[in-house]
Image 1 (cartoon, rainbow, N blue to C red):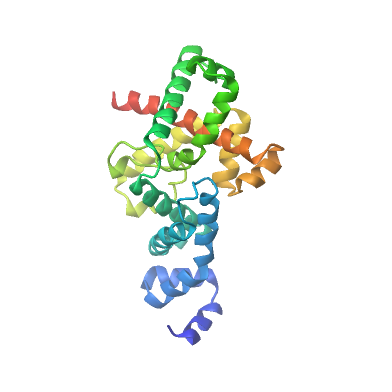
Image 2: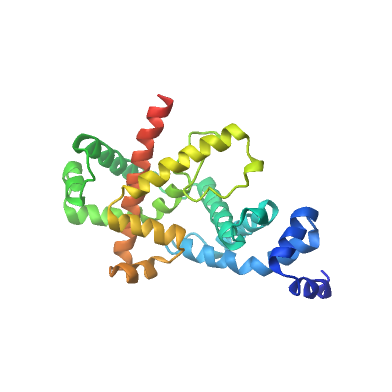
Length: 266
């Protein structure tokens, strides 16, 4: 790579450079952006690794994220008024989640427990017509409150993946994560775009109906990009409690969106 050329790019305003790349798809400019934004990969991988078992190597997460950064650079549209950093972090996170999902690292027993809690929450909220408390969920499952909290801790890693495929029906056109709202419209079939906008509205509405602390955790983690520790400081609770709140929020969202999805296709 020509380092002198890169120095030339440093002197160009970033907005202008993105517009130049958007028109030319220059390999050199792409390489410049890869180097410039590479630190984002380690940042995102670091956030994700906190909730994963030690058997998942940090360096592997970084390697998965590289593909997300390259994808983000290729698809970014500077005319949409969205900051590249925001768009890139979404793509990097998505690439890491996709690879984790493909290696299926979550034990079957943990998946089954997660599904059980989702079903209990869904059934109780359907029956009572309101948000249910921890004690009610535990009682319905036939376990103590302490056992339920312990179970939430064990499930914390699985909920990170759950948000990424929170609306998925087996077809690429039916997949939409909470943050998957930044794709340039011209890259989508108009019918698919309308459908995704509708799903996005369902997701946003479901988030609004979460209990206050759970809603704050979702917003602070996925939109404000705070770590679990930082969220704990904001809410004045422990990092472990933040993880539990996050897990419950994801299960409520999956249950509620599952009901909506059933109504749509049923």
